[in-house]
Image: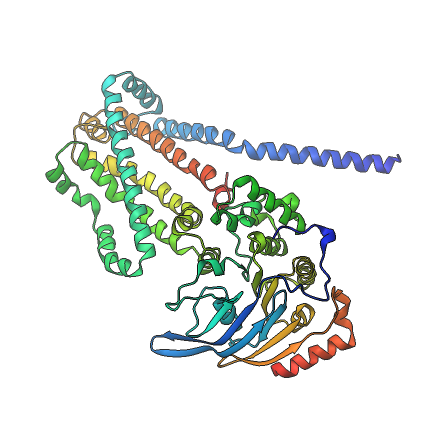
Length: 279
Length: 277
């Protein structure tokens, strides 16, 4: 082996090592950047309060919020509220997904049905939905039902819209293929309609998971004495801004976990689709 | 019919009379009605295709060659006239297809038309699922076909991992999976580059020589038509009619180099003149 070959080998080796290091760095990038950015955010928050001497009634310092959060979490009523809000979010979300998917399939398949129904569905969306909350309270009372109704109203639309797109994404050639192989109806549904619609449906479901959290909180703001959304209002009225922030942090954490869970379905359900390739 | 082993290639010069796969097209006219406008797709087509014959339909755009093929595939009934596959009518009087008759057809689409969520083997085996073939047998059959197509190591890959030519090979194998006696191909190689196209033309000839399916292939490539066909059916446009039927006498298997021969070039020129190019 000559010295030039050796050096080529060495260069290649170094290159390979550099690449594998880059791959590892790339893979764990967000594990490092996310905590760092959160820390930086908290640091800036604290710095702002110190430098501008902000009153804790306006903006409590991060350590006070953290302390309040721990305090709240040690109390059973917090977990009761948490359970109520989560129940509203999850059940409303589930109902919205079913309604959205069923309507989406109907509207996607039947052009006539879409033409007839679409003005009303669009109207239901351009109406400021939050303004309907008092009506829901009137009809369904201050319990969970009125909030679940708000969650459903807010979150079925993206599911329906994306399902329609999914149904339309099936090409005439794909349908022809199933005709040529003489596939019966159930086979078309199982092997063509469902797999083709699924990636689209999931996009709508992800959006719905975000809106579901909003729906429950808005519902509780406007009409409720239970749940985390109501607690935000109560803590503010009690001038406990630190507790209010703590509640919002708790809500944000739940919303994040909920969304992450829903979004992770994609990798399992439609690994073949380009949308599942993102990290 | 089972998969023939390599050594069992029939005499390529003469189709076996015992094979099924005949097509009779009798006075077929297809008229489209849309918004009060009548468009005649094809008019009064008569054509008899022998079992094991390789027929190429060629013509300018608007000559109804794809319309005719779709009618043969059971995708749209003719307005008038009759199509018989193996002596049996493909369509009932009300325009619905006769299931048992269409079972003898395989269709290859223009752009492979694979299902992107299915792996290669599951795409190939799709027609067998409809026929309720058990899974192990489906897998075995897909393996055999993938080997024939040179795609054995890609059985568990998704279509998006394959090149255009490989995808079209998979599509051909899917069409063959249920062992039909007739293969209908709608411009199967038109989206491919010239080199891949030559490769697939050769591969298709090999498959045809081995299995002696009846093939009806639509193309707009004169060279492809002359290279592959036993008979070239020229269709004239507006409305689509049979303009001329030209037999292609070259011996099989035809090498790619045949396209450089004087006889081949003469045939190509003749076709050009007929097509008015």
